[in-house]
Length: 613
Ligand code: AGP
Image 1 (cartoon, rainbow, N blue to C red):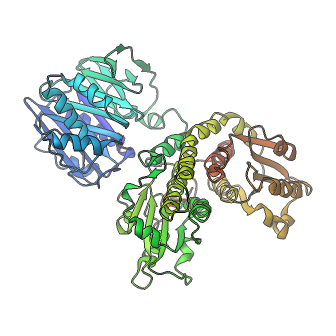
Image 2 (cartoon, rainbow, N blue to C red; image 1 turned 135 degrees about the horizontal axis):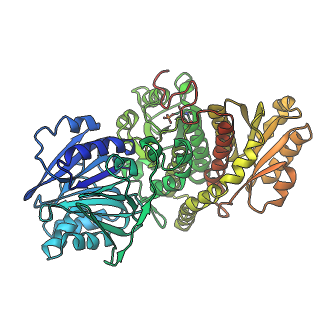
């Protein structure tokens, strides 16, 4: 996720661009840059690091009335200055910023290099600058050449382009990645998100997929990729910047819960084609993956729970012995590690000290294990130190309670499990392709849960005054129960304990009394009948039972007092059910916390990233 901003008709343009970038920094902040249209050339300045690095380096910028800016969150190519945007074409007359992933950039790059273009970065984005250059060299205007270039892209994009030949115009377009355009007297704007424009205008238009906009000083023209003119939809903009950053949601947590279909889509994007899995940045060869004889997963909190789901997937598909341990305990026992061990460190931030130290311990000269880090922040400390990285692409998460990064972690590790199985020759290509197809159905299934938000939240508010909750699950439902309990504890301060449902009868069932609420993850799977028995056991002792069940599962409904309905995952893809089921429990916790008047974005006593032991 990156941030884009552009302005024309603003004298000077630079302060607006820098201010806009600061408001978009939440979308990514590993490098940034600006391009200003300066008579017959485009002046570009880029810097690695936070925006402050760029702000301190633009003292010699020309006075210009039009320009574009970008704050980056790397996906292809490290967060270095030469990979930072804007990218220029070979002539230096065109500058372009991009957010998204161009899946066919290698093919397009080869074609451009054969035609004599020089690509200077490792990004997927730069090819677009040269494709547009090629179109313009063939006689097309900036807008037509941009349209033609974007029509060739497979993947997602929001782009903005300026060219010295059209000094007052910004051409921008989008598919899947967000982009808005705005207008005021004598000036025009584009941005990834409304907050970047608020200081200048409230006349904001939202572009649809495959539309491009030509913005001039006080003018705005929207067309489809085939050139048909369309009337843009004006967006009603109210409130202050923070309200706008929340995108119409009352808090970041709810916004991020709703961003989960996108987080899954982005984490999958470009990594699957039929039975082929391309985990580009993995940096472990097939032979190294084949040599692995044992996997250890380490993480904390929500990341640990994602790892628990992954253990099921790795053992089931790749048939590798897999241990999972909370990171803060791992290095204080004597795990049996060697060069054939693969340690997977899971961390949203890539900075949690417990997980970082566990990974360091695993890679130490004594233990010699290979360390693969699954994390959401490009170039985080853990990512830099690891042998290999698999990035989740959930975008920056502002709520302290992790939500969208959790589902992205599960997706990334399920891909890893399939890849391990594939290189070990344990899954037929058709089976890999079938699982991949199921993975791609998840965003729609998660949307199905989100469509039921109101009824889930209504159900939850019946339990606002409940003191004790138990969360139960079996198989991959157990980590979902743990995560549901953690969300509820973190944001509502209710007491919530999670157990494997079959374990209740060995002790914890003594705590059940009338008024205790038991939330059971009871979606279909091979342990469905068994969890129904466990539900009956607690019900017989007076518990009120809420189940997460698949739509149409009347049997589950008959065992429960309330049902949180969720769509079923495709048959044979039960290992993906946590990605759907957990969303219902996030909403359940959210509704209770809100009804209790809690601050869900910044719960008491917690920090987003814990960098102490
Ligand atoms: C999740 O809601 C938490 N706030 C917390 O458990 C978190 O998952 C944990 O601290 C690990 O953080 P990390 O993923 O950044 O390493």
